[in-house]
Image (cartoon, rainbow, N blue to C red; front, side):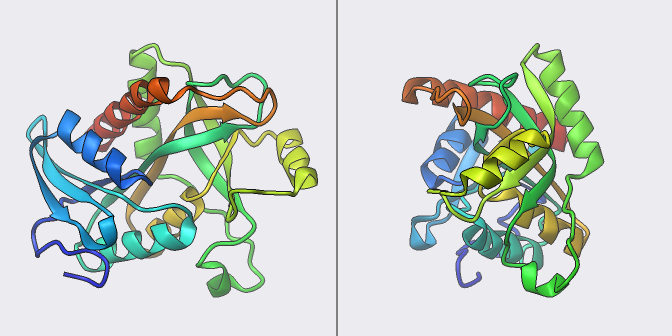
Length: 234
């Protein structure tokens, strides 16, 4: 057990999927895992371990934002020896060619600030995904004929951002989408020599203003879970 995760030794699988919402973790575990067992209830941040196609998998909520994800990812890696961590979550599109419901695989994650920022001081560290996970996820999405985009994203440390100038520059430089966790996940994976990837569903669009209805979000979230699981065990 750790400060934030109540699982006993051996209850966390080597592969961990990390949605931000603990209730989505519950839904994904009940929908895709066999014999799913709740292994964490601390602070309501639910986690479950079960099997998928014979492979042990944990699905653990991470909360919103990089500080929250950093807590769970650190403990999963350092105390439970998690080897593969895949974020599954929503994102806002920043390019017109990307549509609501499309998938984005984050090759890199730019950010203004992460909990790890102080370690690097003057260095502008560039966190990136694990290449094997990235290519496996892309193959899995293409095989399902899903609309998928691969490239750089932006991990914001605020939800209600008022930097329209920064958004415009990122759009001009080809940043695909914005979310709030991947940059710290990729940084921690690099630090500890683990595999990480962010598989994201576009739930809203910063350019067009379109947003995905709540009932459609669950269907699109299912695509993410399946792609993440296939990539993890490719």
